[in-house]
Length: 447
Ligand SMILES: Cc1cc2nc3c(=O)[nH]c(=O)nc-3n(C[C@H](O)[C@H](O)[C@H](O)COP(=O)(O)OP(=O)(O)OC[C@H]3O[C@@H](n4cnc5c(N)ncnc54)[C@H](O)[C@@H]3O)c2cc1C
Image (cartoon, rainbow, N blue to C red; front, side, top):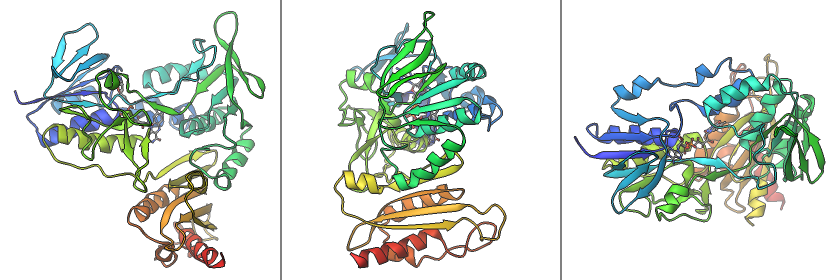
């Protein structure tokens, strides 16, 4: 038997690591521990099954258990790792013997921040994560008339839309003045708010959660907020993601300001023979190096590939990130990359803005949709430092493209003269990115 690589975690990070390790050393023994009953499903699809856009949970499974057996990856389901001993190079599993490793990858992911208010043990508080639990909650949603979503971060936004599509009276409470308040600008989110209003969503901004309220059977009957009481049958707790770092911290691994495990450019931790990946660790922002934690499944998977490959003896690098993001919110798609106007202001970064309202197809082509693009650039050089978008289609592709534009240092001048595809069913003559860049250049000259 070759070297033994142990991976803790069966999410995108852990499975990326297992595959990355096997790619470098096919003879390695790779063991993956997960607390869950399954691996290889997409948690990202759960809100859309709840919203009935996807007909069943079965569609979210990406591979069956035999596929991992065939790939030589030994997955230990329903198995909790309780501690790591980095000097003996072992992990301890609940009710089991210590398991030795040559290399270890920690991919224990995220949890939702504890709301820290009374009533946290009531029945009816839904933390969306595990697919088996989601299947049970989905049956219950058939009986729910009124729901509250706590916080409109990325998952909250998807759940608000899903519950409203399901015909449930949906309330959102959030301490920020608008949805996605930590990343998105108000002039981008305003269309989403309008769309939620059309769907009957009741929004309570600048509102904090004070307590979950229960009935005499121990079930939730409402929430108390800084703006008063809201009755409901169900609460989706979509507080911000925090790193599930207890195992790593107890083993003495260094954690950073976000609580994420600190890694180097090869995803190696401060402990010998231990790598980490995914939402349990923090990675540097490509513009300025600010540590970021709790990114996305695609980041977790890519980091896992690097961590696993290096744990098996490879020498791959994971580069700083620029974080293109996007999602469906109400009837719109919303997205961006790197810094928005609000985050740039909060970080004290001077900037120039170019904003344009355009269209996704030729104006006469059926199904044409609005697309708003906002570009944020450094004064003087007009180097792009971020973008924000909302529209009916084509947001993901623009976010991905602008991610590369930020990463490679493109300027508004480059974007103002970009070539673009014009084909009536898929693209308009004037690309909104180019128009936004032209407006940004004009704004920079006017100041
Ligand atoms: C509802 C939902 C929607 C999402 N939507 C998107 C999306 O649209 N796009 C996107 O890119 N990403 C999405 N994500 C992904 C997500 O936000 C994370 O970024 C991603 O899941 C992180 O992957 P990870 O492998 O780091 O951790 P996780 O997915 O959190 O996995 C952690 C793993 O560690 C295991 N584990 C933890 N502790 C132990 C222990 N002590 N012993 C054994 N096993 C342990 C767990 O069983 C689990 O398998 C979504 C996630 C959810 C839940």
